[in-house]
Amino acid sequence: MNRSANATVVGLQWGDEGKGKIVDALAGVSRYVVRFCGGANAGHTVTVNGQKFAMHLIPCGILHDGVLNFVGNGVVFDPATALGEIDALLSRGVAVSPDNLRISSAAHVVMPWHKAQDSLSEQRLGGGKIGTTARGIGPCYADKANRSTAIRVGDLACPDALAEKIRHVAEIKNKVFSSLFGAEALDAEAIVPEFIEYGRRLAPMICDTGHLLRLACRKGEPILFEGGQGIMLDVDHGTYPFVTSSAVSACGVPQGAGVPPGATGTVVGLVKAYTSRVGAGPFPTEQSNEIGDRLRERGREYGTTTGRPRRCGWLDAFAVRYAAELSGVDELALALLDVLTGFDELKVCTGYRVGGRDLEAFDVTAMGAAECTYESFPGWTSDITACRKFDDLPPEAQQYVKRVGELIGRPVAFISVGPDRQQNIVHRTRLEGLK
Image 1 (cartoon, one colour):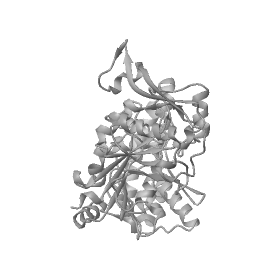
Image 2: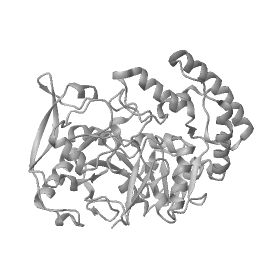
Image 3: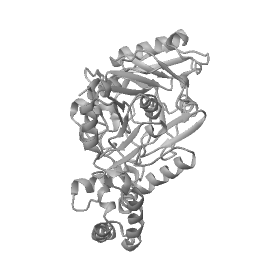
Image 4: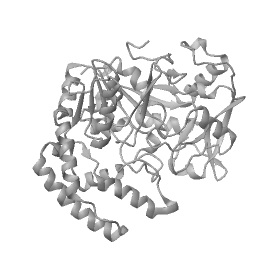
């Protein structure tokens, strides 16, 4: 296996780090691009020649000719969302067919009852709600583990069996929803033809993607694994319970794509030059003030999937170092550096104090009570969006980038200085073929 040809991109914060842009750059030197976790709760944005493309389920490699895109078995798949994205891409002249898009038959399907349960559960929690995207992701993963109430993508291609499963599960869900929430019953007879039609359209793309990827590994063909969300939202290692429902670190690649552990290749960790978070949960460096407002507006910090305004604050290098170590990150991609232009002073969190004592090691459970220790940096005022080399950056920006790499303990390989595909600085990467 030519492991060095592969790469994995993961977010090191609470998602929204700008993964779509770096995946787009790496897709240009890959044969395969694979989504391995999450579902339509992830939103990756790529800007090509001023045109913005927002993908939620379709891998970002779809914008490159000659790239085969896979939705892996670890994804929970919403066929209505996927087909909406496919139709939108086709209308804009982007080719989408079985020649460049395949969907794992073992991926689980997000059904109407999953979205209903998501909304009803959040309403019932009231002020203690988790802050989900209401896309049915958590309930779908729960049914995956429950097994008897799960529907997989492969079932969509078998109309008679699919109809029987939908009626069976809908009956169970309606009893639960009525008892717990007093909700109206879902109409199984309306759901059946809708999902049979989804299956008809998607059937040519459904296959055993894991087999094809293992074959690609044996041949040494370059594979890019596209992560969703960020490691601080990982179901096991994030700020539980304010997390997503899947393994979003590089540790989730083998399980979510059906490949051996060594196939992850070079792990690139995405870190935003500051921090943002959507929904509830601890956020030690949050700035609920003019600084946070300025970061939100300059960074256009509104969810790709939900449109919700994001909470914003300074970069938390203490937490990011933990996330990088967990995923075995080899190199960093620093995103949205241009957003920091114009600040007189910048701050980075280098550690936590809890109960008057400095923490020696990062503890995710301590984040709610943590006081941050900050290191300050001078800002810069010159526009950096036209910079294409590290030496083009103002000295203050260079200092900031170097120190971020030192604090996280990984080299900064890529720097994003604007939203467009060309607004990247390739700095110290070991990946080949990038400009």
